[in-house]
Each structure stands twice: as C-alpha cells, then as structure tokens.
Image (cartoon, rainbow, N blue to C red):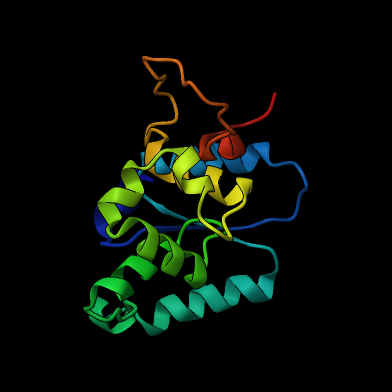
Length: 162
C-alpha cells in the first residue's frame, strides 16, 4: 500500500461488502486511515462500478467543480454546518439560530438549554451536544466525569465488538 500511496495523489480503497461480520471492515478502515487511503464501501457490484465511474469522470477536474456550493450568508453556512449532525434539520437550525443567536452560543450551551428548544427531543439534543463536546480522538478519555448522563459517542458505533 505504501508504494501506491506515494505514486498517486488520491488513493482509494474500495471494498465490496458481502458479509454480515463487521470486524474485517473495522480492520480495513483502520488500515486505510493509517495508510492515508480513502475507504469506501459498496454493497453491490453495481454500486462499486458507479463509484469507479464517478472517480474516473472527475479524475482531472478541479475540486471547485465537485464541491457543493454554499451561499455566503450566515444562515446558509450555519444550516450547512448543523444539518450534518445526525437528526438535525433546517427547521431545527432555524429554532437554534433564533434561540441562541450565534453558532458560538449554540456550541457553548448545555444539554438543558438545548432541550428547552421546541422540536428538539432528547435524541437530537444528545446528538447535537455530543457533536460539539465528544473528543475527536476516540481513544481520548475525559479528565473529568460528566455531570449529566452521556450517550454513546460516534466511536462507540465504529469500534470493533469482541
């Protein structure tokens, strides 16, 4: 894998998934991350072929052609950012924006403050709070114990089961 990585600007590891066992996928994802490969999963040969066709089609195109265009105003950027969090939709962004006034205030708010927003149930509050407060490094352990109940973070769903 190392010689391939040095030869090409973009190295992709495309895996056709044909098993229910996820442990090999975790191993491949870890290997791809360490070797700086993009790891993609396909659940059918047709889907894998589409990925290859798309990569081939955009092979020599500039990134600006592929990248999604986001409007320059504050609300559009905020919407683009927050709707990437699982379960958060445009209506929730409008509610959060009008309640807290700024992205900084949303990030700094507590779970209790977030739960007071209409339309944000317990699950959305946990997803939103965890997006801003969970460590980027899944092996990192918090130095202080949380005062509120904490739901599993993203690392819980991607760590191999024993």
